[in-house]
Amino acid sequence: MEKVARRSHLRQFAFLLIIIIEFSLLLSVSSQEIPSRNHDTADNSPPAVQLDTRHHTVTVDNGLFQVTFEKPSGYLIGIKYKGLDNVLEWRNKRTGRGYWDVVWGDDGLFDKMETQHFNVITQTDDNVELSFSKTWNSHDRSVPLNIDKRFVIRRGVPGIHMYAILERQEDFPSTYMSQMRLVFKLLREFNFMALSDSRQTIMPSENERKHSPNLGFKEAVVLSNNTNDPQLRGQVDDKYQFSYENKDNKLHGWIADSDKLNPAVGFWLITPSNEFRNGGPHKQELTSHVGPTALVMFASTHYVGREMDTHYEQGKPWKKVLGPVFIYLNSALLTKIQMSARHYGKMLKDRYMKQDHGHTMHAHSAFVGLAPPGAAGSWQTDTKGYQFWTQTDKHGRFEIKHVQPGDYNLYAWVPGFIGDYKLNLNITIQPGKEIDLGALIYDPPRNGPTLWEIGIPDRTAAEFFIPDPYPTRMNRICKDPVDRFDSTMHFLVGLIFQRT
Ligand SMILES: *[C@@H]1O[C@H](CO)[C@@H](O)[C@H](O)[C@H]1NC(C)=O
Ligand SMILES: *[C@@H]1O[C@H](CO)[C@@H](O)[C@H](O)[C@H]1NC(C)=O
Image 1 (cartoon, rainbow, N blue to C red):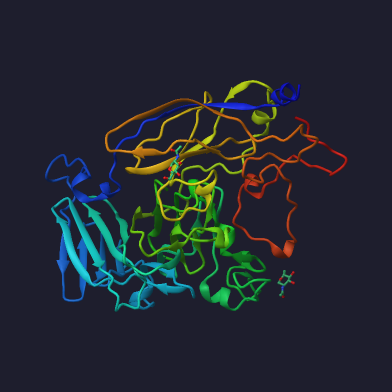
Image 2 (cartoon, rainbow, N blue to C red; image 1 turned 180 degrees about the vertical axis):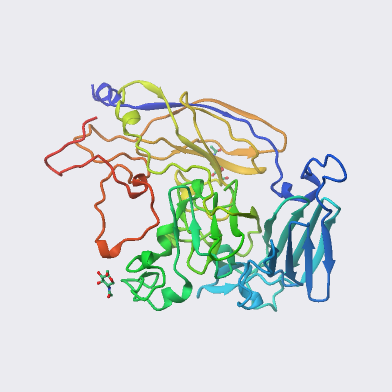
């Protein structure tokens, strides 16, 4: 009897799981494998990529832009583009324009991943790939990490591909590495920040921010009434308001509009995949903020804290490729640019409210991912491995391609249902192999009948009405009501019930 009663409340989901695993080397950004652009005739083809190596610098020029690195530290010190000598902030020290960094150790020291060796990996007319590397030794006071920073400049492409290969050998001492990033400090003239079509704004300068009073914590200030742009006066500036979930954090950057520079210039950070980021597809992460600063965050404890697994133990060798990242430059007379649409906080309620109890149904739009082996949900605190996520179609089918060989578990969750799924199988991905998992069933946890519930377990707060903040605590970033979580769903606890 008890069993029958329980069954009637079961909501089961079938994932029709087909994982097609293809071997794809993450380093495929490396030069030989990149098809070069069609060069039709000799006259139309863009100029060959030129490499100029000096004593302390190395410069690569493809006719569209010119990038200069310090040698052998690997700092990006100059990007010359469209008549501008440097789109990076040349008034900053050479160590503060374009760099990788890691926060490490018990005290959270910053290490700017300065390297000691310079090598040309590839040099052809179509591609130049550079390597700035170092091998850690026990006399070093720096983070115990072997570092290889790679930069690829291609013919006819106005931008730089970059990635870093990080490695810890077995005998490296245990340490924390709580944050890994790539940082760009742009020319002051970059005054407009764009994170998506609906989230973009003019920005205050670093100086205006400095002279504005702090709110409750140091990252938030109210811009003073002395701020130059009247639209910004009295607005709140706080970099944590510019975060996106990893799955949506693909393109952001800055524009110096035509009042500031002629022609207007855009500087964009593009990360087409996210398997190298920590915490899975729903972890929030910083993008761009005052400076003008543009970041690629690979790992951090932001929004999670100490539960993130950031301790790297002696005796456990580790290697990870961060990237690829593409820095793209463009210029136009118009300052408005179209970016790929991102949909935020879209209401899922209609779709998921109509639940059919006691039947097996397809896991529509479920998030499914391969992440390092662990307990159900452990992907949310994983920092060390790769994670390959996708979403099922309306029949619950999915396919995960281009997985880095290694050991994984398969995790999932279904929008509208509580609980974290983990397939009880250790999956080893091998080059060139496909794995077909057939149909899998998820039985969400349930301890008894639901009396009442508020909201949808979908890892967003999109359905909740959040009133406008005080008029004196606003900022201009959100252009679209969806981004303001302006929902139509209002609950009065004890009076209005959401029925399922
Ligand atoms: C700044 O100006 C606004 C609008 O004029 C006013 O409401 C606000 O009180 C002023 N803030 C300060 C700190 O003076
Ligand atoms: C998967 O591997 C872990 C670690 O080796 C082991 O403890 C676990 O029993 C394995 N699970 C299955 C289903 O084989």
